Image: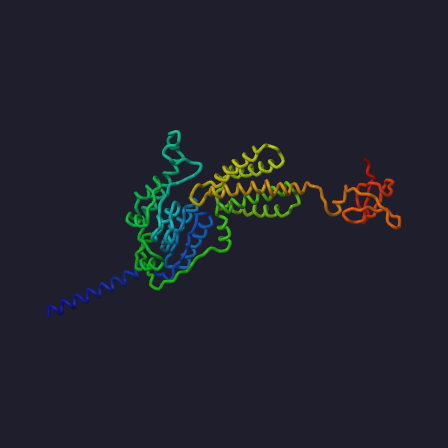
Length: 446
């Protein structure tokens, strides 16, 4: 009898437990949840176009009641302002945002690490890294001491302290490792995916998207004080991709592309100004310049760098007209290299021009100006030897045909001639003009 009573009580207990767990799932699950999640890709440097795309996608996913969002990220860093825009959107999201450093070998460096800290769920794939969050700027010295042993300036301290406080607040909100966060900023440390998991910087490691969805299943996520339980069984991804305008603008967010556009613009417009009527260089330069103006809305351009590159082109052009024994060329090379190196107001990885590209462009410009341009200028300045203009100034000897009319042999043809001077057979003449098919000539005098 006692055994029966015991089994009955145990059965009631199990039943109550099952009912309780079911009710708990219903209570804490988002009533608007559906069987889809939003997939967003963040690849390359963090710039205004990518930030706009991600912010719009997060808002759209919220409006479409997606169950959660997965941002697949591989970035070397980027602009602080664009990074903050993305983080604001993540923090404001009413559905969970999973930031996944993917594919294998990807990185969440600099701005990418801040974005990882802000995620509701931070995940990394094998072979990835995170960190190097130290702020950098060509206008500030963030080292503790500079070359003269001068202590760090007040502006550097303000920027550094503000950045540390911002990252600490993200780590505190998501309950991530605060000590690691501070070291990643102050000492610019980085960690592997395994180290990041052990240190509590990320939530877990996932081999691929299938593994990620498997590990997200039944996971409880805190959203503004209330819990949401994810259900990934049979879930389907809805990809949120850039439209053609965003892809077009993002293409020109590459510093090397912008750099080449500016060079083409300066060279093309410079050639057209120097030799009006060439048309093609002017059109190509003008189009490149307008695209360049559009591109600098995306990337931070240093005006001094622009000025130095323009000065270099001017010096190269002057070398064609002034004998400087190479001094103008040397000055142009130095100006071009320095200007190119400081052209973009950010030394972040992916936000500067490789020195190999700069040297390649210098060699191209030298060959272009001192071979192609010099030949074109020489041709424009040379005497025309074809057509009507090619006859002006030509000399010949007067002959008489069978009808007694005077003619002259030029360029393998006999031409009728008229002259205000008195000429006769055998006289030497100089062509001064043309009327129809008759040459206007003057008698040549010694």
